[in-house]
Image 1 (cartoon, protein in one colour):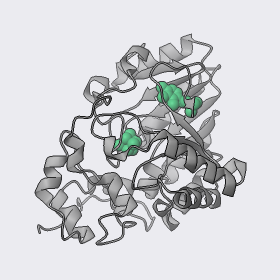
Image 2: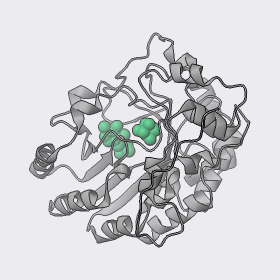
Image 3: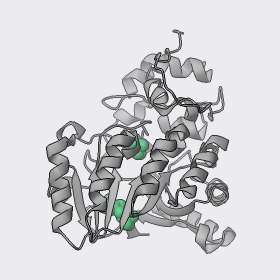
Length: 341
Ligand SMILES: *Cc1c(COP(=O)(O)O)cnc(C)c1O
Ligand code: SF4
């Protein structure tokens, strides 16, 4: 086994005892050998993992890695990030762009598919590479938002008074610096017909130190109602540090929702989903969507049948208060909303 990757010798002036988020981003585990060594995965073959990555490289943040049980190849958090050779299998009915998003892109980097809401692909960077991700083949390089692009996006939003909400997505919008985010939000604040800003982000769970004073400052400063949709698939993802970050977000007036992707081997059991809802509730986060997997090439081994999904929903409804039951949905390429199942 090789030496673990070295932490970049960056210096920060934060007084926080937590590792600053930029240092976490600089020390993401990207090397299969390091992953196996850190997790004590004796049986795993680093070369095989490297091959399984295809064109979607391994990427695991260390705070998340710490929540994985050492030596357990079936750990539900590990399975979300561990490249498997099945990813290379071509599956009929699965495609590189299952949502056919190109046609809803009036301006590069902006998706206007649903009434009243636009989704902005702020960047292509993520703190983690989830193996089931429907954006794993997304042509991010063609969608890099430069200054000129961003201005076109602002102009589009300003010109359409039916738009009430802007959704920052990606990649992950919280991998963008706070100074850049603060500037963008200031521009959106000035568009009178906007009411809400939504963040779709996995970062508060992946790298909780991201929720620092600079981040909380622009969240507090905006006149827009801020809704943050985190993305946790399993209760084990939520530890004390994550709880603290979520608490700080709520303290800044942010409404917290969670979306989960239903994944075979990870959370396709009623007791797992019940525990997730209970844990979210303790964290002040309301379950929002439970997504059926998008049919993206390379993710077929995570698929759960609609029949099994319906059974799981029945079990959730039988054991949880209604407000802790997420809505089971699928994203259809041509539907004007997420499709309830
Ligand atoms: C999911 C999604 C939204 C938001 O949908 P909600 O049902 O409001 O959560 C908006 N735009 C696009 C392109 C989406 O995929
Ligand atoms: S964080 Fe979100 S966008 Fe990034 S890889 Fe995971 S699911 Fe995909």
